[in-house]
Length: 145
Ligand code: HEM
Image (cartoon, helix red, strand yellow):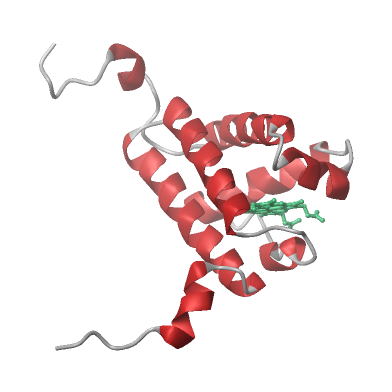
């Protein structure tokens, strides 16, 4: 196999986002989140065992973010207010999300999921006042010329 050729397993993965891919990603990612010793208890405390409605919301959210479907009309920032979370939780969330993305898709599909997740993670952290950007902004000085 030439160095440029993707392994056959990876080549079989979708490189375009579809509702079907979003459903598989959301379901697998949140199954892992629920099992995660750090993130799982945070969700359990908020949602209990009532996951069906949450998964439907998350599928609609990712559909709106990546396919511009307009299926999600909620307020993600408000949903995170009051959770005891810091930048390490977001780092762990992203690591788990990116691992799952890499297992289920490739190319432009994987790149878009990861890009949007990182941007929204940054935005949530800034909104909650815990993000590195939020903390650094007032201290940032112009680069010395
Ligand atoms: C520290 C990492 C995170 C934790 C612990 C966390 C936890 C939660 C919890 C507990 C809820 C349910 C809130 C409720 O229904 O009362 C929720 C909702 C939600 N989360 Fe997160 N979250 C994290 C990061 C993220 C990131 C990075 C994104 C997006 C990229 C995201 C997107 C959402 C969305 C869209 C909802 C649904 C909001 C709604 O009900 O309309 N979360 N999250």
